Image (cartoon, rainbow, N blue to C red; front, side, top):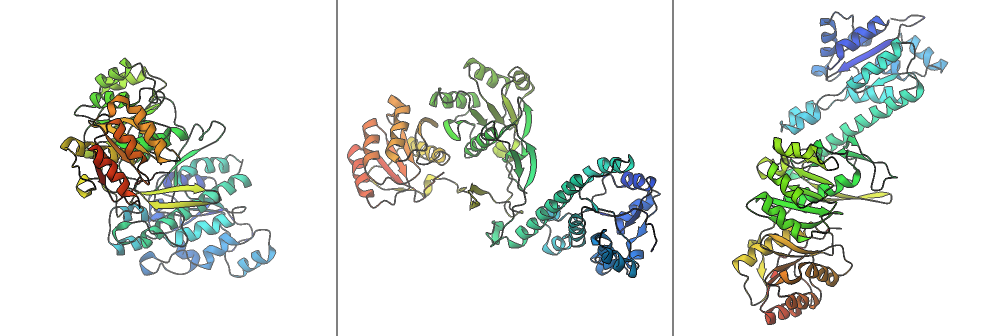
Length: 529
């Protein structure tokens, strides 16, 4: 195959055959020669495209059931040879090898096979070795070799080649960066699969690359002068916003998604029809009821001021009546997230052009599947720090009063037990230090993000006002002093739920006993920073 002036040559080896025949025909018509492997070569030949089998280039047959096809100097020398280095070209010619000008590769479907729960032997067979090696080699030598890792790139690149414009160095560099990113994500998925602990929990290895994939560019970041994009992890849970569909309204911003995620996570605590109104990452009103409009009314009454311009998430289908109910409140909302919308509701949404509506089927309890055990399928939380990142397993422990302890002399009533459980589920989603006052399955007051717990309690009790009588109070952390218990007793609170564990627990318990107020310990805190 040695020749003085070489015909431009592409190596094509693709698992995903999307656009393959069209690519092959256009390259052939433009005077390119095609080298290919296995199923890709067969597919091209079936389409009447001349193909040189890679075995004819390497002089070696495919081995080990296809595990070794392209791992040969005849292939990689043609990719990696530096065109402006005479010694590289001399060595290439001495061996009878030829230059490769384009590499078109996509990889074995490791992610799809791992996600479907295949046995390990099948998953391992779908770890591509030759493909990533080809992409890395081509991307390293991008000044001379065009590297295509995504079928969506084919048409634009071929058009540039056939029109005479060519693929300039900046474009080649972008293609190379995309290829390295693609391989990096692929490798990180494999590392996550092999490094998973029993039960599929995310391992925390010495080195970690998260396999993120861009879902969309956003209108702006946390502030309008910042840019932003939304990325997804593999195996997102059913309630993940990655799975949401944009129904109507403006495009999304960073804050839209951050607030929507907080509202969605809060409403997912409940199986009954639930409404969470949220502002600046904190629930300002949350309620459950037998009917969604009733739950909305209770959530609205929890804080009719803060809900303005906020986000609302619900866990049942939004109907026209619900939309009318919101309109009757003359309420401006930024976002509405629901598992579904009736046709009448969709018509109402069209008339509220500034309201962004998302459909997220996983909000309905009946549509939440378990993704644990899949690749990074378990929930994780994280925070970027300056120059680093924190990762943690998510606080997804189910909250049930059956695990709690009555710490004082007073036993809660049946209604108080129900309210205590509700309040603790809400306070778990409020920024620390946080206190929630609730009654009848609805929040009455929320104290969020305070530097001390007393101020959080004051805010929550002030929000509740006279409604605090016979309500309950939940705290995300223990009460280090009896001051919060005294405030609660003065407001007529019927029961307090807190983690317990302070060295001064006895003082808070004594205040509760004297006031005829129940004191409940959960043994577990729910800080949220």
